[in-house]
Image (cartoon, rainbow, N blue to C red; front, top):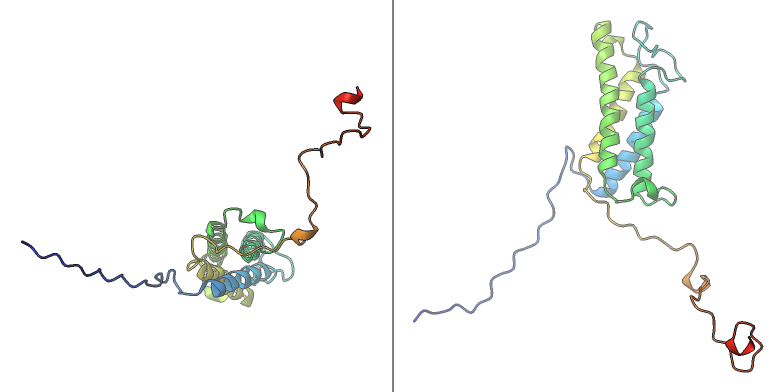
Length: 194
């Protein structure tokens, strides 16, 4: 006969999920980087990116975006709004109804692609990186921040506990049925009074 080993198999040790993305960050740090980067990307659109008006869109004006800077501004604002929604800010829950991070990644990638396309196009068309103003460099770094913050984000955002607007003891109760009428009461809807 064969011997049967009656020992229980050892349970495998649970391992932490593997770090994802270009820069392995915890979720709170990634969210903060998304929010700060989205805000900085939107703000960088108000700086001059080049010194000459030879590039289409006139990106030489400080304080007023022009041309592709409007797309960078829009992507930065959308990224910041999605980052605020991922924190569970009241009133922004409709932006992330499934509580996933796909919109965050998409808006971060779009802001990065638009900004870096513009910076590279300025350098190529005008003959080098020397044609960038400090605002162009700030925009390039600012657009990189949300991309770094979005890459390690989990696919789903952990549920944030929501507090009710009123305590449950103060909520009005709705009765689906009318209370029964007592015999002898003068209720006009009772069959005896008809």
